Length: 417
View 1 (cartoon, rainbow, N blue to C red):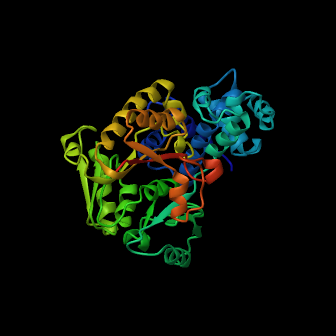
View 2: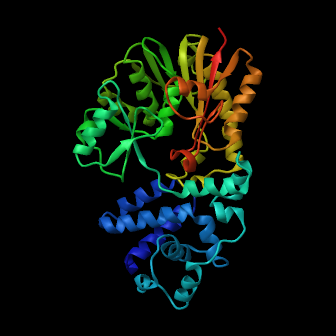
View 3: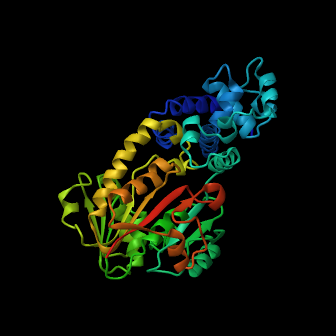
């Protein structure tokens, strides 16, 4: 694709703002497009795709641009090395000497450096469960691919096979997801906000991995269930449908804005058993009054989000060992508080969208050591009971390059009767 001087100038500005890493990259991009609302669709596409490609491959691009690393050179290197632009298409933007440099990096071999080969900063590599170099590179490459668009079918309103037929008849290419019995994977990223199935609440956008967390919770009709960190409510809606809109389902969150985003989704879903509740912190009195009463509690804990790097590639630079350590304190406190709600014989699911044992296994093992009245239920057995053909052992552990979902972790714990 030919790149104009104007497009390149805009791209350079976006990268300059993104690479400060003081705000989420998608927030930076949205703000830029609002300020430059006369940009055409093709301009927006080129800027967005190139900027995010730069973030995904930043370790490699920094290596190729060294020793003079700046946003201009990073943008050029991204267009040529990642985007496949040829030098003729960049004639209007290259300066003296840059064409020769770009020609030299187009096919340059990767160095032995593991960060460059995997696309992951050294601090992330050091904290991964994967320590074999081949595994680290495979994971890193998986995290640079584009995430598919997954939907969850609202089982209150439609069966998955019916939804697949309906979507295909409306011109949307799709197929059932390989693991979740509620999931549909779309080809491409079609607009859905005005699609009849979306408007009537028969489908919701939700990554397959996120669906599996809800299914592991195993909510049933008539139960009392708590989604402890509900956010915008994707898993809340799944749990409510599992409960056939009976019993009581509490959606707790500390963010009023996130709970506000749940309201329109809840209205479409047809659920009447959801009680969305704003809490100040994990020890809020609204939480304490449910002590020992809940049949099931799902804790999708605040985390580094490193499992979502396909969507949010900037997180590997906005997080750090220090921020992970701070999150660990919060994760342990939230899990301990949520556990108090679980009745004897009840189920507690701890989950994150992180790849790091420090946020996953380590938190669970410390909790079990401090709470001998809880025991670990093997995730593979629970999935097999639901006829889900996925075995990652006692814990659910999803990896993009192996399962084509975001990176997720879940542990299922049961309070002894």
